[in-house]
Amino acid sequence: MPILYVYPKKGEFFRFPLKKKKISVGRSDDNDISIPDPFSSGHHALIYPSETGYVVRDNNSKNGTFLNGNKISSETELNKGDEILIGSTRIIFNKELSTNVEVTDGLSSSANINTIMHLEEILKKPDISTTIRAAAKPFDIERIKSEHRSFSAISEVSKALILHMPLNELLEHIMDLINENLPMDRGIMMLKEGNPAQLISKVVRINNKKLLNKKIQVSQSIINMAVNKHSAVLASDVQADPRFKAQESIIKLNIHSAMCVPLWNNKEIIGIIYSDRISILEKFSDEDLRLLTLLSNLAAVKIENAKLFEQSIEKEKMEKELSLASQIQKDFLPKENPSCKNFKIAGNNIPCYQVGGDYYDFISIDASRLGIIVADVSGKGVSASLLMASLRAALHSDIHSQYKLEKMAAKLNDFVHRSSPINSFITFFFCEFDKKSGELRYINAGHNPPLILDKKGKIHRLESCGLCLGMFPSQVYEAKKVTLNAGDTAVIFTDGITESRNKENKDFEEGGLIKALRKHSKLSAQKLLEKIYEELDSFTSGTDQMDDMTLVILKRVS
Image 1 (cartoon, rainbow, N blue to C red):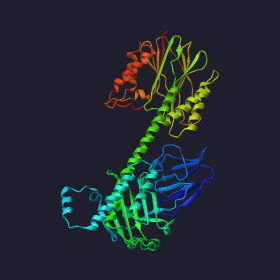
Image 2 (image 1 turned 90 degrees about the vertical axis):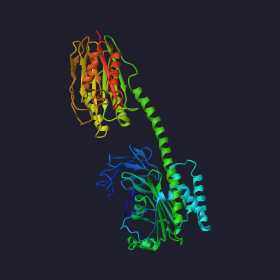
Image 3 (image 1 turned 120 degrees about the vertical axis):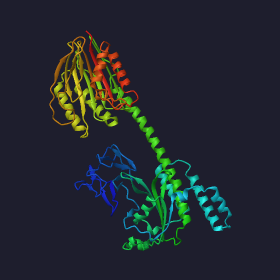
């Protein structure tokens, strides 16, 4: 049975066995795992079984849910050792941490702080005058040995970090290299993660076997000093710190010396490295502090490069998947316009992103009737396109020669309400077009009213018959009728057309569409559609497309 190991920022960790059921995690008491974390939402995340194991999903939380340092946006598979971060609470899937790191609060005290060096002081390049003065100083064998040691260590670490490796392996490798060049009893690398960003322990090194499986307590004030002041900090006789006098574990451990340096990537601090000596009697020196700072700077730059490399790989992978999804979605849309005696029909969709939530279709009902659909899923991108695909599948399943329009609309509404998040809905227009008489029997579920331009130039609107699909269950929709006469043109569109904006932040609006429709009303359906898009392109010139755009033209020519 898989187990969740829950590590609050303060206090002891606990185990939670998973028993093949959905569990909720959050700050509220009615969760399966209730965590008193101020950065957690009331019902923050869900963990539940999948076909292959278990998955985690964010539950529309305020600060998001992170898996292995990355914010998740959808259901994500869990593997052994994966770390879920909710607020400042760490949850490890099916693997117990060998050592738990706790950042201890306490009154700030500098009584035991021996050295504070600002990063700029350590990392700046020496100017020529400094070099000349240093060369003029009396021969100092110890200083030369120290500088040679630092140069050798930096050179060795630089060479070792040339080749790319996965981020988790890189973090382990960095701590191994630091450990080799700076003897210590314990070392910790912590990186900033989550929202709000906080320091999370990523790698722990314990060289003294007597200290294995013991909690490591790191002073919050030392970390704050390192991060807030952009400084490397060296402390000695940590047990003398008044904050720890009441903590028997610290006194027993008898920490002789500790260092804490920021991981600075030349742009920002991305974490810290902490090390201490307990059994090693020799205290860390100022030269040790400089060396650790230089090595940490090298490490931070390499970590940042590794993150960027992995992000670029992930982006490339996502772009390929989106490209495939885009092609699949295009295959869902009509490949050609239907041919119909006495009528001309044309349709087109332009997604805002590679995939979108607009949908139009022509579905044959029987020899004399054609279903014409235009719909707009709330939102954009992948989530909207998935709901659109579900709607299309349901429509193609429900439409046949014996179908009932009102019942179909009510059934679709309940399907969308049942299978989508509470904030998702679909504006939906469906018309049953009689190819002989020109009658349109339609249902408008919260969609922009389609326009009919008659041969006299008058505009008629096919107003809404009910609420958008999915807003509320058990809705009743009443079908309405209208007939297209010779010379009439019907235009069905999504709000991406009328809400397109120009440089002056003005919308194209229904008025712009009507103007273009009247201006080019003598053209064929396909040419009219193209001219409307041209008018829209001219209006929005120099601005980015803000929404998916769909347009269907139905014109009676005789």
